[in-house]
Length: 123
Image (cartoon, rainbow, N blue to C red; front, side, top):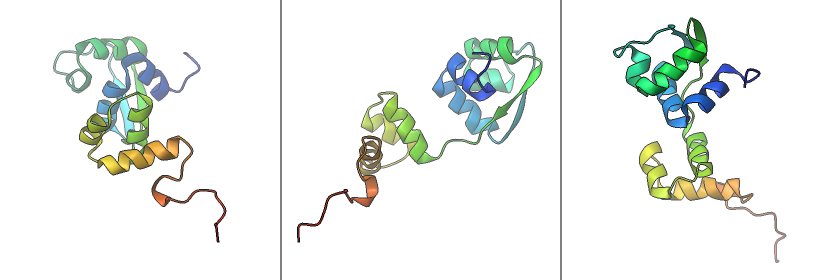
């Protein structure tokens, strides 16, 4: 896991939900991670004590590049691939059911929102 970029390593260590919370709060910058995180440190308050301890153990004393929050389509695709239900995806991302089904269709090789298929015209 040492050859992974910091963000990918962080995802594997603490999970998508906690990493997404960090991205929402600190996205677009470098986050300094102290070697010891107290109960009231912003990282601890964002991801919880257990995940914060893991972050400090791996990255303590250094910086992590935190990407901007994912776009809605990327969030929907990530949640679909994680096996989340359509209603849960709608609530978490703030999109319609129709949008989730469009993204599902695209992930399965379909046309998604465009509605076009690679079929010849009949006439």
